[in-house]
View 1 (cartoon, rainbow, N blue to C red):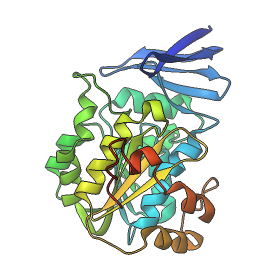
View 2 (view 1 turned 45 degrees about the vertical axis):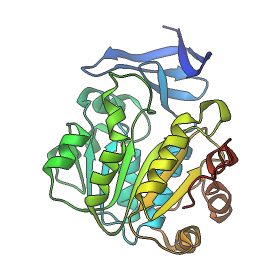
View 3 (view 1 turned 60 degrees about the horizontal axis):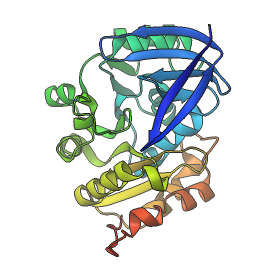
View 4 (view 1 turned 45 degrees about the horizontal axis):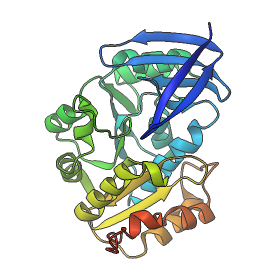
Length: 291
């Protein structure tokens, strides 16, 4: 079965995906999930928005996960909110984490990813995470509620959700807000880092990125931007304390990291950590906050 998915892309803009074969098309309790074959390989769509593809998922997940793992003093305990595929949890374990709490509200979506996608959890790995017998423990619940109910502290907290949007019924929006970021910061160990998908740096889609950058620079003593040079998304990391030359610290740590990325090297870190001009300097002439 073939289909075409019209993905919202910006004000007055859409992107059309040709899906040559549908592997799964289902409605969970929270969203419409479709997994199908596109020109980029097996592709995950949620509510008609591309979440990951076989061809580009590693670039996306490394851009999300590598900078905070290099910025944190240690990576022994990690909290992941969202990220249904499980790729970032696997990266955290490779980095050296012996505890990864993976929180996702949509159990059906997580299981669909493990069953049908060739990246992330295998069904056996997911079953182990559900039993909690390995380093990864999965919790099918709301991220806000989980954070309120745990006394655990983490070296890295990862927020990997669909893009923040203007839909008043989008329950995930509150997990991008300043209140939730403060609560995440309170659950960090000393030297810990909070990271989140910040939005798209493209000029006609950068409203959420500018908002997210202002939140991070306002809430954290150290804020680091990383815009993937091979994807369309940018990511933000924050430490409550202020450290000198955070990017230099990340570059120094890269050669000895437990997880060795294939799409990020020292030059990528140097270039990708400079926010776009429209984020750093506003049309009014008022500069954005410095990290």
